[in-house]
Image 1 (cartoon, rainbow, N blue to C red):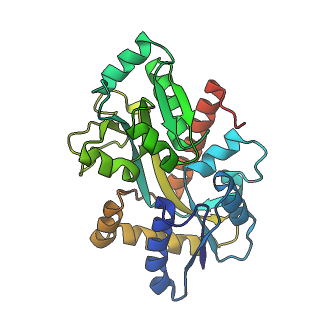
Image 2: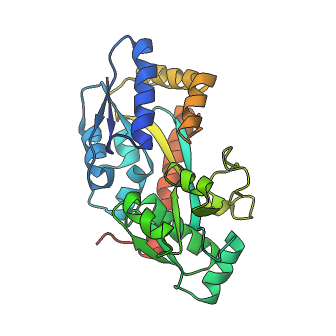
Length: 292
């Protein structure tokens, strides 16, 4: 069995896939390998998985796979048409952060500042159409403000400018900024999870601030190319996944990676993917987002 990860090694999807491989291998009685196929914002890896017909391939799906068809209609795959859901593994919140030197000390203060001077507040992101970018657009749309997105080639390129105060704010993956928040170099105004983050109990959620519509989380979900694994096989994988996510040891390992276990059965996962795709397609259309 192989699990295709459409990203480079070391990220959340990759670490989650390697954990699943470790869990599945002894239960299935066969080797489970992780194959990283990065490129084109995950399109290369997702397309390769969709086209696989060997019956032994899974894809570690994430937000980008439902975003890309709306952002780039020419992509060759469609999630509902080309994949069968196995289940959900985890969710990972974003943190809305500003430099420690910023005068913005809360989400209401940021909204007020953005309304007072439309377009002057900048939000860094890791590229057009990425989750960080769409989070800033959802924030602006949901709060009636105008922000100016500033795309970078990845979070590592963005962080120095954010830390240096060259951009106003960023909606970044929590693991990327947690150390800077704890050290006091960045100030977290909110997290995008439904519940507070255990390591940052003083940082409010958007839900607690009265903005549940601003919740935007990364997620990881194993999927199989449509029709390549019989229903009984998919049910077996879903059962193994549910069993693993009920284990305190597995839940602790996910938590250590700043991931929240997100157990959903196959049907609920399918509905979730459809809802996520519709949500991002709507914001991409409403905000006129295009890849140059």
